[in-house]
Length: 295
Image (cartoon, rainbow, N blue to C red; front, side):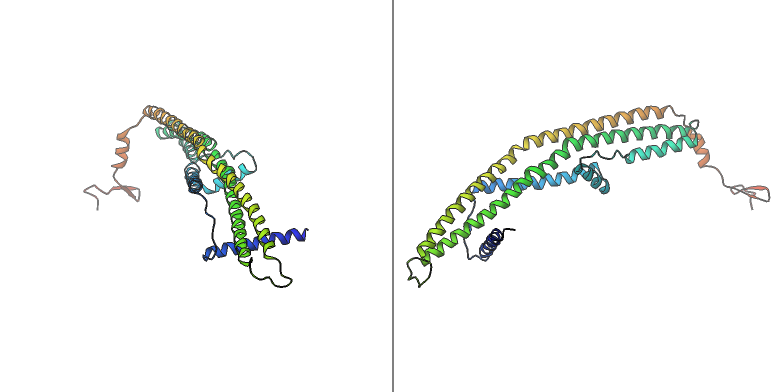
């Protein structure tokens, strides 16, 4: 371990902490960035904020189950394929199909259950395809934007703030060194002119480091606006996937209505069952509750 380097880093951290504290209490000056830079920074923060909200909203709509969302994210991190799980519509349709088989395809109700169950399963497959397309064309690109471009910008902005604290700390040291210059130096004390020269050299280096980091950060911030063209393409892909989903779903339902129209339905049988008179049997004798002769 390089103790000298470690001590130097600790000293820099302390200097920055002191500078930050003095700025907060108003006893130290702070270098302000220009208005254009601040505008770019605000736009980047806004882009990150709304992209995060849209991602959360899209995921909650496409994958309502939070557990499934976490599972899918884990599989993406380890670069494995997402689990090919059935949708709720497919489970619903499967129950209908099983019930229809149990009641018998020869009965009207059983036949209808088989037809509706099959349609629900097809709807579930259409829904799964839509979710897959939306995730690949909209969610994944936006998440990549947050995890690459925005994460890099956040890192560089943090580094710029560090360089800014170093710069302002150097300015403070130079002001103190100049205030000592011209005063009578004590014996064995460091010549104030030497302190001023050293402070000026430190300031020049800190200013160069700050300017270079500000330019790097500014270039990254300017790239955020240009990324909106790609985001517009992702949005169009989402709309196309959703349009296809509703179109296919509508076709499935229209076809189902035609199939159900061929299923025989006898309203009189239902009415006869609904209007049936309650009958009790006592000692092998049936008693009609609505008969006038009933006790």
